[in-house]
Length: 287
Ligand SMILES: Cc1cc2nc3c(=O)[nH]c(=O)nc-3n(C[C@H](O)[C@H](O)[C@H](O)COP(=O)(O)O)c2cc1C
Ligand code: SF4
Ligand code: SF4
Image: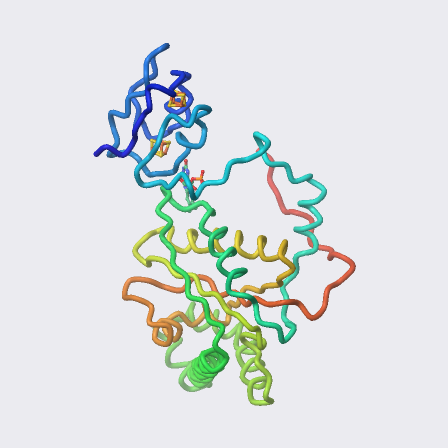
């Protein structure tokens, strides 16, 4: 396969690369011996071996060294109190300034989102960035259409009939019916209750067939939103969009076998609160 190359001129035979790999790619390390990648077929290209090497002696032909960042300190430090402040002050933003988000800023967010964990490093996720206002308005319109049809199916006689076949689903839909009605009502009053007039919406989609396809999209979503916060951008997860995956798939041309698992509005916040919020204490069992 020749995935991994060890430069014996540089290698210090420290064994760190084989020690850090959990996929048994390397033969068991022997003192003073060069690392021997005997099971390259196991490699998930996670890059831990390349990153740990103190001598830049190991390269991986699927990983571009020029795309990696060297850390000045061994462990980049964000003071815990700074991280805490960031996490406490990051709120869901639903009021945006009328300022577009520059394309290079969005590009940076996608680059950072790709740093997020994924199952066996599959990086099984793709992005769609929509900044075109007519497209966003059409998306909003079509999603409202979807919720209108759900409201219709929830009307008494139809609901009673469908409950015979899918009682649990109809019960769950019944609980959120008032929310659907409120969204449709606001839309009819001229508001934009789904994307809230945000200048940018990012969709992340992954494989339906991958048991962890959704998780892979959500880790990227969280990285993206936190990085956005550090850049003065606000964001919000839009469940009203991902709640209608079929509608999104049609408008966004999502390939068969894939599904949009994340929709995030993005823009410069109109309001910023000078205070955080109280949340429930954690419900936890210590074992
Ligand atoms: C949904 C999901 C499931 C994962 N499951 C495991 C796991 O069971 N065991 C494990 O060692 N790593 C697991 N990982 C970690 C990935 O293997 C890891 O994120 C990936 O190889 C990239 O490496 P990095 O996170 O160190 O950058 C999981 C990651 C995700 C997002
Ligand atoms: S890239 Fe990851 S899986 Fe592949 S050899 Fe290196 S540490 Fe092991
Ligand atoms: S981590 Fe680098 S220096 Fe150490 S054994 Fe592996 S290739 Fe050689």
